[in-house]
Length: 312
Image (tube, rainbow, N blue to C red):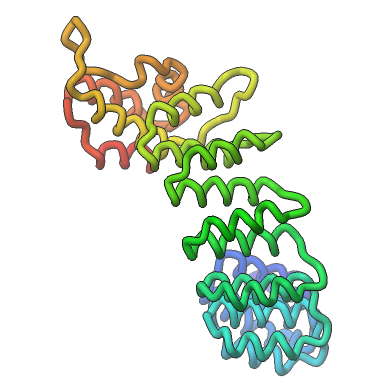
């Protein structure tokens, strides 16, 4: 736009800054900041808020604070942007002081503080703020659940999960991942079975749980089930990574087994839908996946690296 002599308006500048913030593009954002001064948008609240959000997201809290202090008009988005920057940078004390200064806190303000403390493993402070919240949303509850799981307290995580007035798919998937991390596969499956509308992410979580907890047959069976016409979910690379991991473990468990014709045991023989998925050229877009069974037929010890290459 500027190369052909056009002068951008505040909307164009704000949109460009938001795009830089989304991908955390430092250099491009700084260059656009220069254009803000050049075209005289220093006093535009929308442009200034976009600048503040950019510097908060790229971790330059010093510049973000300078932009904030120079703003003639501040709204709740402005306050929350800088607060998020403090918490993301791990400046918890400064973030707490800034949080206390916010004239009108909304649920995003509270969630930022809780998330910052939870990520730092300070669940006592996170719990205290959670109890003080005037209103909570899914993110509030899910942040507490994730925080306790990351701290190794699956019991506390389950207490918050059970106390939720309503749950969304993130809540359920988070608990499945938490139980998987703790090796409690049966509880993870219990949560999975509670889900009314199972999407690809929920199947990925449960398949990964089986694969990570030495239950390769169950992982392949569940994968086989999600390919059935009545479900018909299309697997992605996350699905594939877990399935290949399960396949390799099942291979190792049965490496000594041979059929009467002398061929090596292939786990996919009993999972025809799995075989068809792996052997479908459009799934990976490369001929290499077609070599997978040929490799396993001729090698008793398939390389881990070979499998990793297939999912990249």
